[in-house]
Length: 254
View 1 (cartoon, rainbow, N blue to C red):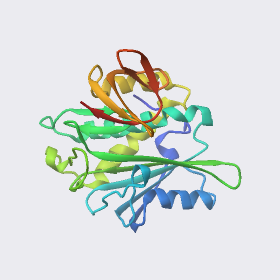
View 2: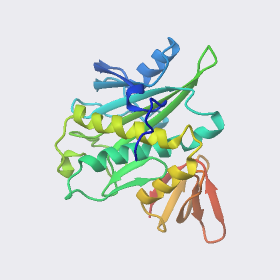
View 3: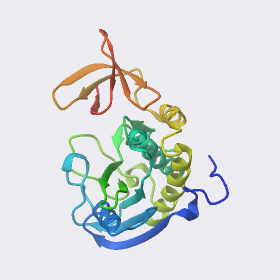
């Protein structure tokens, strides 16, 4: 997918990059920059994080050798169109990994909504955070941590690293692929207006469509068949008695 020429909002030269040796969290650093008035389109990477975090406040292992990157966007899309952004981000990570993984690697797939799996094992963490700023703008941070040399030893799910898959790449080199893929995907996403294009691409990379899954919601768990996603990116769960659309939940394959 090519980027529209002419210096569009998401052309490659619209993005800046600042590399840090160590920081608490690249997401935290991006939000701090936003509060100070940064205009966005800023990538922050770090060799090491001292307080990396994942979804729901979980700690994220941040040893040197992995990729830790966050992208700050300002007013990325109208609020009602932001819901498909996690799918777009997962496509960018998927595209970057597809460029570097050897043919001997296990299958590369995306688990709804944005877990990028290699051989059904988690290869990275993606954390999106947003904050309304004092001047009325909205900051959105796309945080991405990819297991290159290290992976958690105590994860409650299967995990892998690129090194385990036969890919020996530096964090800097992998980031160059992610930088390019993210620009291309955000251009295609078109501030949320091209959600149907994004969901179509996501389905092509999806893991487990048609298979039995369990979806853990805040108040209950529901079993059913993963029937795919709709054109807005919602998970479609066929329980046998009814077909449900789910906006958020943790998915496990049965």
